[in-house]
Length: 634
Image (tube, rainbow, N blue to C red; front, side, top):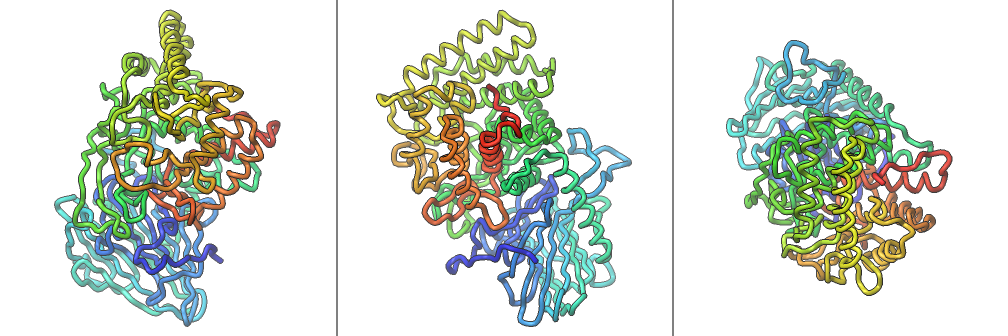
């Protein structure tokens, strides 16, 4: 029986963010509400305009498949080891199980090459099909299907047309976005403008299916329920086979590690190896507020933490592909950005969609992200740390990449004294952020180590001298009178990014300033035990309103507490954070520390990356002999 009954949300027409289920085929993803409605889906890429956007406006399109007149399921779960969602419904007259997945099948591009894949093809590939199956388990259930796409973020409502002589299939498309959808089912479809409708009564043992594709050529749609079941079986095999490649400790927290790994795999864009920050845009960090950003892009900042987590769990293929994506954009972009589109394109224009109401009225709704053009000096350090970690794990450094690395290290050396927007992409005044200076030191330090590996001792010596100069400057100007590192030079404000100091090896965990900083953040930059990025009243970030506790920062605190020897405290915090997971063991970007409500875009890759690292820190510390040391680049 499925688990995790759904909680009501105080009368809001929007489900709580944490109640959404996440589906993926590693090219496209979607969010499924507890009601069985697909409320977010962008095709053919996750950064494309939405075709279902009800999560941002109830009129922006959705796709419901479930019992008529029953909205609250008895329970939901993922099939173990997969990203396949199973929802169990109890109605007045019976029981129904609905299975949802984005189909993955054997590699099928046998006659010509893909025009999107740049990475080495695997044995599996996305079928570009959203598949939904229903089975009546007991009694009788009235089953309802309503598929109502609204193209281009709800700006263009088109009309369905029958595709064959019977009632089994239909087609709808929008010329402006070039997206064409085909729907096939064993029910009888009727069309009312943009709404495709079907309704029937299922009795015990009866089944039904519906499949939606956006694949223009050779659509891989099942024609029968038996074929639909075979597609689900193939997809199950894909996810479980992939998960079996990982190395997960035999530990009570194993399920959290596995669900985080599956979420991260689902947030990858297989054709290029990019890792999305999240699958959504403009889910608010402040309820009803304006802290709403588009996270459907790949941040290079995530790279170091992604590689830490992926290598730690033995998921080398994904680590290699993401590293190749980083190498591609670094090699072809003279002025490296902090983020890129999933295809590696640098242009990410920010636009406000004024016609959408926003999640629970939170506006503006933004697509694109102007932070791509910000000056964020930590980008050089995260790329160099990623390369160093990858090189250590492979004992190989690509010759084509070395000139790029030299350029990045020299950029850090040339600009580290200048102010920037910082790791948190503040839209206020530029500052001399301590974490940015630290990451410039990382760029010089990792560059020096890589130069030594190549035998280029003169370059290594020069970069070492600059690294020492940055280190001395940070230690002189980034510390307050208490011996605590602060957000920026001359400030007394705290910043959770400084929890990375011992994790990146800037200072040893035994250093009194590191201990003082970690404990100050734990005690003074926390609300109800959960860590804030910074206090909005102390930091000019250019946006009004408060924000919740950033989950990545709380997981960083777990790792930092382990480093400074506070293992009992680290375990206690880790247990609490794991208890705050969504009913499906997923995490948004933030949590309201008082209510436990998830805030921000969902699911959030950065949170799941930090979870993996923090959980493994605690497990290793408690049983050092059974588990190898973590692999941050120290």
